[in-house]
Image 1: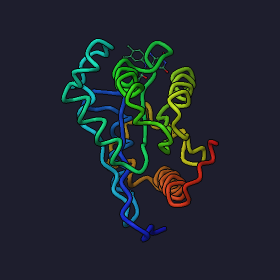
Image 2: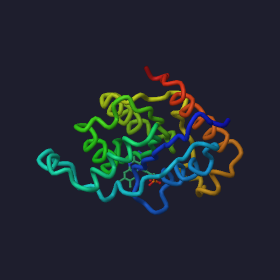
Image 3: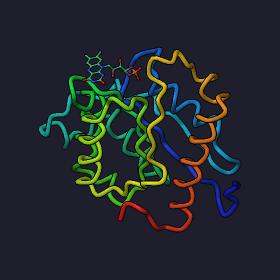
Image 4: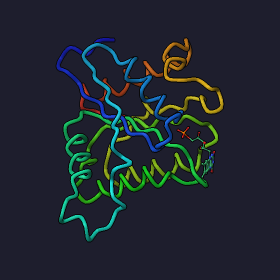
Length: 186
Ligand SMILES: Cc1cc2nc3c(=O)[nH]c(=O)nc-3n(C[C@H](O)[C@H](O)[C@H](O)COP(=O)(O)O)c2cc1C
């Protein structure tokens, strides 16, 4: 599917800082699978955010302002995060907490990717947080891709027949929601 009405920008956020992260590899693979007219960029700076402190919000730390500007400039978000101790990783929750006050997520179409069918607690918590931030979870684009423990790299994910087909469908659903300005999560 090709989205020609205008160039579409999708920002991808990974909740893992591991170099060999499955979640980051999944998002990078999606960047490679993006249709023409759609750019998926994996944000590299979540690890540079200070720990959230409401006292720091007025000073708008540069890593926070940079993340916010990238989110505001994007048409949609892709989010993939591991589960740590039945919760969302501190990396992801910290980033989300910084974005609550500035309302960067309000009305933003979001696809929640899950790299592990086991990670039900984190996914449920992430869904709740994203919803209360007034983003629009695009259900047709929010899929579980069982790659944990598979040793699949970014290349392996992008080249895998079934997985790449699922990821292309998720991207198409997200782009379609952006194009039409309607979100199945509503
Ligand atoms: C501190 C810690 C806690 C974890 N807790 C859970 C958990 O509660 N449930 C689960 O399914 N996996 C858990 N895991 C496994 C991770 O989800 C798994 O290692 C995953 O690959 C991490 O994602 P990544 O490859 O993108 O870094 C935990 C891993 C770590 C390091």
